Image 1: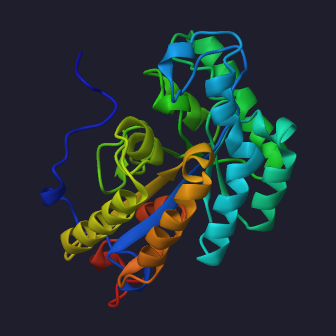
Image 2: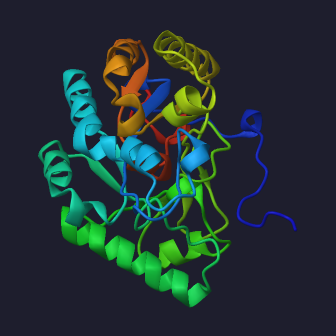
Amino acid sequence: MDNQLYDYSPIVDREPISWPGGARVAFYVGLNVEHYEVDRPSTSTFEGTAGLKPDPLNYGWRDYGPRVGIWRVIESLDRHRIRASVLLNSDVGARYPQIVEAGLARDWTWLAHGKNNSIFQADMTVEEERAYLTEVVDTIEKDTGRRPRGWMGPALTETFRTPELLAELGLDYVLDWTNDDQPYRLNVPGMLSVPYSVELNDIGLFVSKGLTGPDFVQIVKDQLDQLHEDAADSGRVMALALHPFVIGQPFRLKYLDQALEYVVNHPGVWVTTSDEIADRFVSGSSPERAGSDGTA
């Protein structure tokens, strides 16, 4: 079937986008804060035991994130004065409230990321999905005091109805369609796609590809340098996707620090959140509607 959610739009044919202060690249950290059910298979470092119940090897690897890894990542983000855009499972608030408290103290942006990372809504009926999404969004609002505006499905899963149902709940953007370096409008009134990355993603780089910490640093540098060059005439977005059970391992942390150090000191970078990127795009960021210096 043809894709009716969004239209084809070559990036070279669009109206220019400008970011505040004349920045070329809008950068945000997409920090995945997740809960996994102990009796379901999920993201694994060793597939040989992934189907077992319980699976201590893989479950314990994932569970390292909220117990240990997240706190290292928080220290790194604090050092570089970066506010996270948190992809939050709604189960997290009840199970790991200290993480939510830490995020509230740092004014993190909260996006809905499903109930947990063991349940996908792909096979739900429309009424089942509506009830599921409502519970997820309402729970996150209760736990954080803020209604999320953005959505990313567990494992980037959606149904064909998901953006429309999210719009009913007051959300206005999704991260699941990782096909662009700029935000764009979906064919659902009021809904945007904001860039996210399965390439610049610690699971893909470290777990799937087996790359090293120095490889990670170089990839972040290369990504930013190329996007900065591309953005001479129109702004770009760079998302760095992080999972505490991966990037929060002790031997990787210094490489996250090195990568973030490069980003925050790079000229022409707006270090921001996914909410602020969506706001800027919607408010009108073309030079004709912005100030002469590229700011609104």
